[in-house]
Image (cartoon, rainbow, N blue to C red; front, side, top):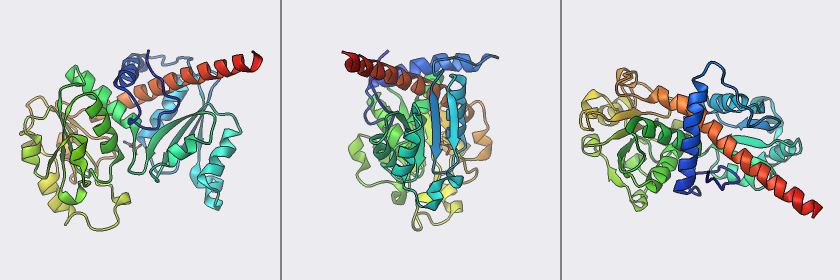
Length: 320
Ligand code: CP
């Protein structure tokens, strides 16, 4: 198995063989998670702390389940009740927790780059659960696993990513991952929600759903990230849905077997029609949630192996 990373901070620094390693191991954890008894012991004796400075349903729940299924002691730090509310900085909070010798630290933070900064201050392995507009690496990995299982491959596909690209860490991580795996990527958004210079990433840029979806294998919808907007980016939700909301008519431009994805949380009737989101013949949205647990198990398993190997090397150096 090839996985060299010390932390999982983004897709940016992962090589294609490392991405394949995560997906292959996650496939095995999908099988485990479908059994009645879902226990493994690869993190036995290890401590995992989840620090979420931003709201989450899917990511926090799946990291917690993933750690527990692998035998770790899992602690969810309650940020609302912590000393962060008394003015303690992120770094001081991290150093305080680091002194308790955790092995895995899972962090979501509203500021881009905050998780990278934190990783430079602690001894344990750090997993980025989403930082600002920067990256959401486990989301891109679970999306890749969902695509690979639905389409049989994760190369040479036409993937349309539609919606609020400008404010989306999910779009950025997917753009990086799908590009590394040699897919054709189309970004579809109103000009106000398309980051400038994005075509330099080697993707095609559209502001028309019919043209952008033509012949797509995968249609990935994104939520309007209102918490990261500081002005009016769309005339109205009604107008946005009319032009950019995915419904059966717009989906008809994609391939007949195109799959529909959404990272959640979903705003039905804003970026996606509710009936289409629930259509199990087209939508893989619930599969994405299932793959999320398996991918997070795989990532923590691989990081724990590297952490043990590093500690083993240091112990040898100490006694040499
Ligand atoms: N996709 C995603 O990150 O969802 P949550 O915000 O609920 O974790």
